[in-house]
Image: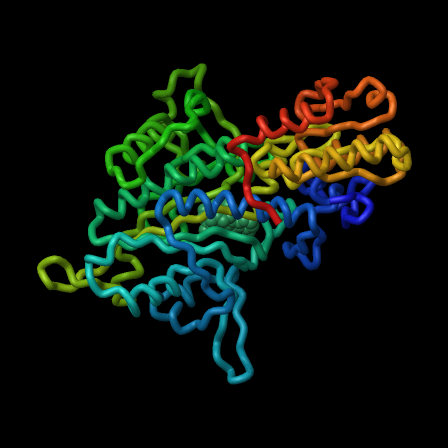
Length: 450
Ligand SMILES: Nc1ncnc2c1ncn2[C@@H]1O[C@H](COP(=O)(O)OP(=O)(O)OP(=O)(O)O)[C@@H](O)[C@H]1O
Ligand SMILES: [Mg+2]
């Protein structure tokens, strides 16, 4: 992509309405534009990151054996009356009527709809286990939308639903989700700690939230600092193995880590004092087991091995896809701008031509872009006639993790400069070597983009 032909409406000034750094940087980097309170348009750079995050979620869901579907945004109120939630959900639910006077709502979550799909098509225990999920826009009429995409009213969520014959099977699905979520967040360069949480209007008693530690987080959290040393890393987990998934769940949840809703002072006091932490976190996901809460009232049963109908055991599992952009930026930025982790960066490197119009600099820059494309990497080629300082400032603001700087002086010696956004360190390399090095860096981090 040539910057001169791209649509990257960066802002020079700090927007007054943004209270936290991620919101400020998303606006300044031209990633989003507010259209109404808590409702945003996604501009090209923001949309690119959003799609990468979605694709990581899809890849990890596929790895765990979960099946993608797409349910509608507008739903009939009738199903929600069956579960009793039409009246319970309160003012966060956006309700409307169609021209025939029928009650509709904009989905805040989709337990009822997916249970209806299940009961229409699944009749036997032999069809279980089954986990269906979608990535779809949700609407919650939040009383105080704020912090940009972090607490929107319209937001993108991955919501998944497991259907199992027994409680044990459903708890395996719970653990499998926990493991797959850990992998998902780690691929985005994030540490999200599972913490015991409260189930809220979804119901049920087995639930963990995943929190990214950040001063600007809206949740107060209490934890044993040793939890921050645990990583899933590159372990291969067999998602069908009950024991392997349970072992990971136990490893990640053995130490004290809770949100304020479930905080237990006496238990916290048992944590060695030097490891007790009180901090803030951003909730980027939540998993629930809620048994037969929806299957029973909605008649979602299967015929068990003995021929008798039994209500299925269910859980639901959510990832805040659009909120993750804010969380990643909160966790990874400096005073000059965003620093994207390799797994989600909108472009793999910026190619900055310091002397546009100089035949040699132009040819070298274009050759680098072509070599990157051949290696499966996507460059953002700055071919504008801005000053070098302004070009670097834009690169730093939009946060591409790598920059290749091409100028006549270096080219005389056959080199370009490869700079890390994170460390600021540069090295001079022949152009082919710079591209080879990028290809090595991105090995294992290539996610399909748009
Ligand atoms: N208003 C919102 N804006 C952006 N993302 C959201 C919003 N509400 C929820 N999410 C994301 O969707 C995920 C799954 O939804 P869930 O029903 O667990 O939300 P929640 O617990 O009500 O969130 P919160 O406590 O932050 O209001 C959350 O973990 C969060 O990452
Ligand atoms: Mg939640």
